[in-house]
Amino acid sequence: MTPNGYAAAYAQSLEHPDEFWRRAAERIEWITPPTTILDSTNAPLHRWFTGATLNTCFNALDRHVRDGRGEQPALIHDSPVTATTTTITYADLLGRVATFAGALASLGVEKGDRVVIYMPMVPEAVIAMLACARLGAIHSVVFGGFAPAELAARIEDAQPKVVVAASCGIEPSRVVEYKPMLDAALDRSSHKPESVIVLQREQARAAVGERDTDWEEMDWDELVADAEPADCVEVAATDPLYVLYTSGTTGRPKGIVRDNGGHAVALRWSMDNIYGIHPGDVWFTASDVGWVVGHSYIVYAPLLTGATTVLYEGKPVGTPDAGAFWRLIAEHKVRAMFTAPTAYRAIKRLDPQGELMREHDLSSLDTVFLAGERLDPDTYEWATSRLGVPVVDNWWQTETGWPIASNLRGLEPMPLKPGSPSVPVPGYAVAILDETGAPLPAGQEGAICLKLPMPPGTLPTLWGDDQRFVDGYLSTFPGYYVSGDGGYVDEDGYLYVMGRTDDILNVAGHRLSTGSIEAALAGHQDVAECAVIGVADELKGQVPRGLVVLKGGVDGTGAEGERICAELVQRVRDEVGPVAALRQVDVVAALPKTRSGKILRKTMREIADGRTPVVPGTIEDASVLETLATVLRRST
Image (cartoon, rainbow, N blue to C red; front, side, top):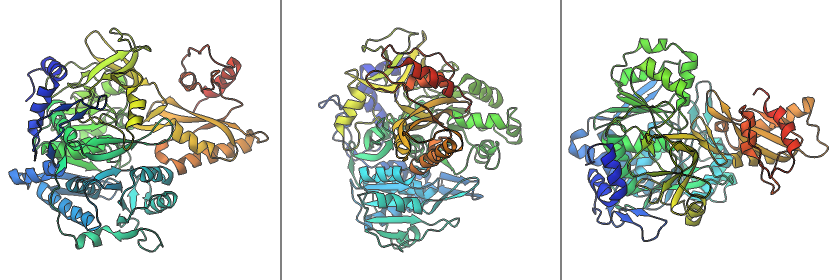
């Protein structure tokens, strides 16, 4: 399917993309096979497999059952927070998905309708996603930790016909009730769904149908009990499979669109060639279905492949200890796992000698993959030496849906370099550009960009907003997608990603906008002006830090200042959610700006990280920056 060796595959993918992706598409079962592979008639908006039709759920479930894998485990739900482990075969998962698809259809859900899913890491979240795919409906999963304001913003934009939620999520030390947050979000939203489905969990059952609302509420079990299984609906390869919202620099969420055809082809190719995972292998991704990693590598990629995927409702530490991952790998005979470097840093901090590893048989484990944030060399060396298997960094984004750069373990394993996610993946023409858009030579740092067209599986546009997609990603350097990350390529062609160049924070692999956090701070009655910057953190990689200028006459010192700062921290928790991880807000006299009024976030971030910044010549008042440096260098 793929030319032998990395160099040949990469060259063909860029020089003859039609042939490369035509062959990759043979691993997917089509209703109408593709004849047009790359459609550039509406450039810079490119589409893949125009005119072809398929059903993603059929490729993930039905064909495996038809081909004899019905009794193979499809999904293992391992939940230390409820002390349960459940194995669901492909045949069983197909039955549950078809039935829930029938339940959604009974509520009027049809091809093209949106369904918002607000659930924790339970099998029903996967079932709901696949049921939408079965009907040709478009799912939009919202991370269960998001507060009502963030959930409401996504409901406003997606305008779902149905919302599917759970009564609660379970953390190591508490139960988080979802239904009150959902009710608050729906009260705030001008768009009201026709129906709300609630999965009741015994840890906190929700009141359903007791409010006077514009929408019908019902229990999951009661709805499913009367449902007839639904068949797969034929959709175009270019029809949306899902919309996943990510933070925009203005605070408004961006709906990343993923289509059916390109997504299926790219993810199936990636499992073989990047991850070296094949039908029947057990694959464990420690993430959440609310993030892109969960969409791609908990749900769709392993099931499209015919592998067994582990759905883990727990933490790397605290459920019950820093040996949780090792227990899971040993019990389920995991061949490869995928998580964020933050998880390994947390384990390392509590078990630096890896003593808990020795309690478990990890002989099934071939490879560890880490992504979502920079893999620092210390964590790489620790994991490699303790586990004795390759620890592979890979770099990608919500927008791309699958890796831009990695070490292709299934195609051609290459030497690993600490600090680098290795080389560009076939399909991605990576370029390092200077401020004028000119390519930079090896070793020089600039903006990491991707030459158009990007490969299948990447976002074709933003939900309902082609122009925002073009303006936000494709206009800075015509002919290129701007990743928002900076870095360089070394003499061997290895990519090094050095960090964000925009106002997006990367907190433990979760992308958050400074704008959304600043909006919460600015809503406080005593705040005149505010800024949020990301500062380096040993565990999470980066955490937000708030800086506020108070209104005239408000005392920002002593106990009064401490009270205001505590209220601001709580306000962000209420408005954005605990995922924002804001712990520190400082009152300052003024914020440094350029003469044009732009706040110098990059400069402040460098000061907070202990670096010496290059202060722009356009700064309005250097003395403000000097005063602020004292505040920023306080211990967090």
